[in-house]
Structures are given as structure tokens and as C-alpha cells.
Image (tube, helix red, strand yellow):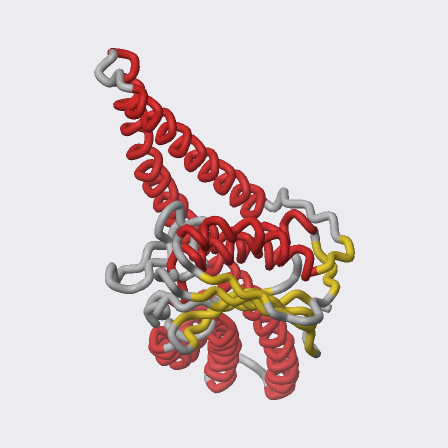
Length: 335
């Protein structure tokens, strides 16, 4: 009896090894392929190894022909069910693996963005703070006393304070966008009125740089949007265009409606954006790598990132392209 059991085990082991060893080589070759394929192949090898062991035992005359037929009928049916379950499980695992990989990649990008943001904000705050401290100490110690210099120091301190306050406002807006706490109060808004107010607010800065602002659309559409956020989108695009357009240049604002919805475009004569920078223009605090080209992230570097966040919060999209002698930012809002 013991001898028969030993022979059965050896026969089953030999039959299983005939399938398992090539199967192991096959699995090694497929290790870089999909999870679903690997699971299905593993289950197929397991079922075939079982069948090979059963056939080996039957050939050793330890299994009757009737019992062999029953086993050869049951095992393949169970194998098919196992393969089906393996295919479903493999697809679920593959989706989960892809989701986890995407989540890890987004987490790495977010962490890198946070590090860059902290570094850039620290740099942008350190310089004006150092200047304000030096001017305040000079005023306090009486190093400067003539009224003209004192007045100039006060003006520069106020200007730097306003710039830092604007930077803090941008950071707060970005935090609302990235954290998902931004809540829009949508209403019917006249896009022409928003553009007119933004152009009027930007006119002094444009005049100081001898830049002409043009807004010549006859019929501006009504859009469903949050008026404060829409105003900030237009204002940021205008200020961005004015900042990079050379003197005696032109900034043009146009808009309209088409089959996709309403659109607004701000064009300038900045000379264009380097092609390598175009995909990253809307990244937070991105500063172009080519100093001779237009640098999208100069200054705080948050204006265009805020534009993208606010536009996407409205369900729209924003894009940039180079046109003759400059570039054009186009905002599309859904109908």
C-alpha cells in the first residue's frame, strides 16, 4: 500500500513537472506583460499540470478508464471557470495598478510643485522684505532726512507692500483652487461688461508702457459664470499680455460664440513663446528655461495658473498658441 502511494506520488509529480517547468520559463518571459495575461497563464499552467499528473497516474495503471474519463471531464470544466475568474481578477488588478501608478505620479508631481512653489515664494518674498527692512532702518536711524528721499522711501515701501499683498492673494486663490474649496456662484454675466471693466483697469499700466489696448468685438455674448472669478480671468490675461509686450505694442481682446460655447481671446505682440515652454505656461510658478525668450513665470508666476484653475472650475478650457508676432490666449466656456 505504501509502495503504491509512493508510485502514485512520483507519477503525479513527474507529470506535473513536465508542464510546470516550461510554464515557469514562460511566466518569466511574460513578467513585463499585463497582469491579466500573467494570471491567466498561471491558472492554465496549474490546470494543465494537474491534468498531466492525472494522465501519468492513469498510465501507471492506478486509475480505471471510467474514473479517468470522469476526471478529464471535471477538471477542464473547473479549469475554464478558473480561467474566467482569473481573467476578471486580472483586469481588476490591472486597473487598480494603473490607478495606483497614476496616483503615485500625480503625488510626485504635486510634491515637486509644492517644493518649487515654496522655493519661489521664499525668493520672491526675501528680496522685497530685505529692501523694506533696509529702508525702514534708514528712516528709523535718521540716515535719510531730506523730504524727497523720505517720500521716495515711503512710496517704495508702500509699493513693495502692495506687491507682497498681491502675492499672498494669489497664493490664497491657488490654495482654494487646488484644495477644491472654490465655490462658484453662477449667473448670467455680460462678457462685454467684464472685458470693458478689465480694460479700463489695465489702461493706466498699458499707457505707462505705451501699449495700445484694443477691444473691438461688436456683440459680446452672455455667459454663465461667476462674475468675480471671470473678472479675474480677464484681468490676469490682460496684465500678463501687457507685462510681456514691448513698448508701442498692441494687446487685443476679442470674443464671441460658436458651436462649442462662448470664447474670449487675448492677443499680444510679445514676439511669441518658446515652443518648449508652451506646454508648461500654465504650471504654477513656472519660469521658462530660456532667458532670452518670453518667460511665462516671471514675477510671482501664479497669474496664468490661476487662470487655468478658474477656467476649469467653470467647466471650460484655456489654451495658448503663437500667432504672427506674438501669442494668443483663448478661453472657452461651455454653452
